[in-house]
Image 1 (cartoon, rainbow, N blue to C red):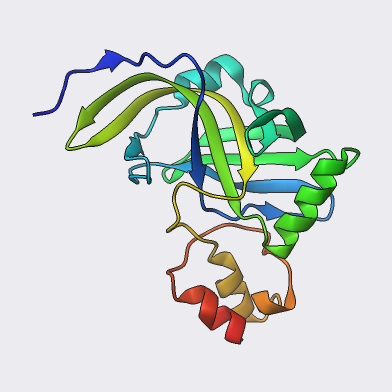
Image 2: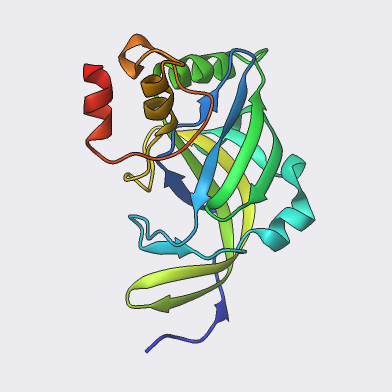
Length: 194
């Protein structure tokens, strides 16, 4: 039987990592999904649609930090737009290329060595049902580029579509497509084979 809604009792931010390769451009522009709705992560949490709405109204994109590996001493840029859509929490930002770590992150993202986005937050309202914590309201503190994502099944698929159309070279020839979508676990091997 589901428990009733109750305020969460967490003082420090929680961290949720998502395996979505953010697209990154030569000038440091980054976009991707920092969270997906309706997907149970490895920590047995599921984010409900609308969970970020109140926090985004209060903070706006400028009030959410852009960090490396959730380290508050490693800001690497600024988020310019954060919004909820039907899929999840869509983020757009820019790495500050005057910062050494941001240049490193840009290079690693473009190579594909880093491929995750992750949120740092405080759960405001949640409920447990069938062993899953359903996050109903979240106070979003930060979005980080991370090495180890919490949702390993999420992957970029735009590379696949554009490569088939001849718009970009296959992934094995380098680079990340300037958009974000999905593919199954077999797609990376097929792409690398060309």
